[in-house]
Image (tube, rainbow, N blue to C red; front, side, top):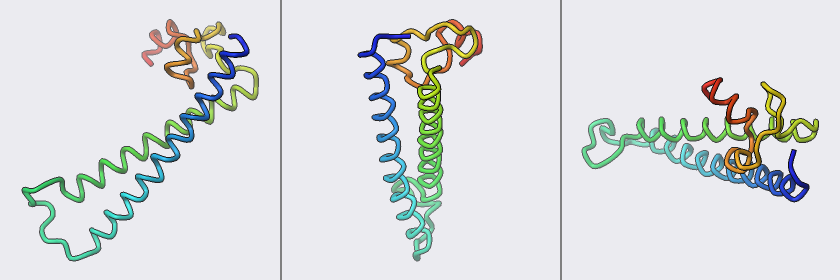
Length: 121
């Protein structure tokens, strides 16, 4: 697939992305707890407050961000499984190596650029 140095770089990148997503989830969970508390308190007509974002809108945004971070962690975990199985960096469609440049940008990629374009991914 790639040189040993590149493989080490990519594994470190996967770990770094996993850690960053975990930190984001923890921060979002704190935000959701604050919103939960605000929803439970005596808040005056939040939906019609011209001064800012409603609690409902903020809640929806936070939940969407958390779901995205959890999906990212799942993709990273799958990449680590492929790493451990010896199939990391190999296109699931054509079996060729995924270029290092693509893996640096999207380290959990499962397809080479050509197959990703064909799949619309």
